[in-house]
Length: 405
Image 1 (cartoon, rainbow, N blue to C red):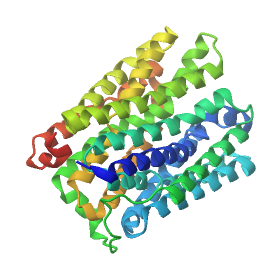
Image 2 (cartoon, rainbow, N blue to C red):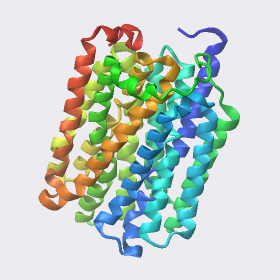
Image 3 (cartoon, rainbow, N blue to C red):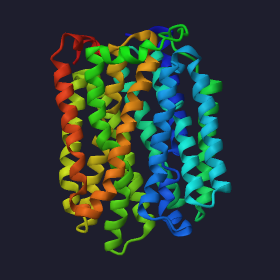
């Protein structure tokens, strides 16, 4: 238990890093959220529009792979890495808004944005891990909740902001730059930070030799098969379904923000419950709920808008609620000297998996329609449950959340 003078600074650090993560991650879907406008303006087909999101995922994979191979979050000061990458992502995103006039240029810049975001997401988790030992599941849940709101924010900006997509994309860049400045000037490493470590390429493979870490990763990979395909394509399905009722595009964007934003509530609630009742149990419950939503959400397409949005909100809350718990497991089961490398490698492979499911979805929509396309995401969470239940039965699980498996 962290007591005394450290207790106050850790909550301040959590608030500041969470705000910075929210602002930085506004870059992720900043262009995807305006894809319908770009499709008209640049005459993009559905496949080209999908690459506006896929390029970010692939850039993130490339960035996290390089970061993990060179142990960047462990060999250099992590808050400097966060700030530098937030500024870089903001600059590239702003250049897209100002200069891009075609899909190919935008896709290349989205890839570069993804590379920079690799230095924002995992380093943010490492910073929080240096401040929290007890209550780490809750702290990371708050951080991932803020990240979720950040990724949802472009849909809110579109609903209430400028009619110009370029202005809205520039706004996301300004927010990300502010996030980088917050971490650079107002955040410091916590009391559980270790000294910068020497470069060690073997740490990448050591991650897979650790049985507990390996199973936590398998759970995360199943979770990721579902998560980003849902975040990318649920707004498109909502737009299409709402259009059948004659409602406005602004309503669809606001609803998309609400559905994705519900994940913030799910993350915080899951963090509190996981620290009390166990990470593997709470993560598995969240995956069971989200997996069930994969199976039923399509059946509501074109029917009652309110019922569709209600189920989508439950899906939005549960689909990311477990995310922080996989990361918390890595910090508790892995080598503490190279926890940044372990977190970065976990996200690298997880996001590589997302590129497959994101690309698969439009093909399924063409083949079977929105009513059945999301069913293909259900195997991910159910395989994730199997991995987490296996981890729960291992002796190593006694290290998780102070013995709360």
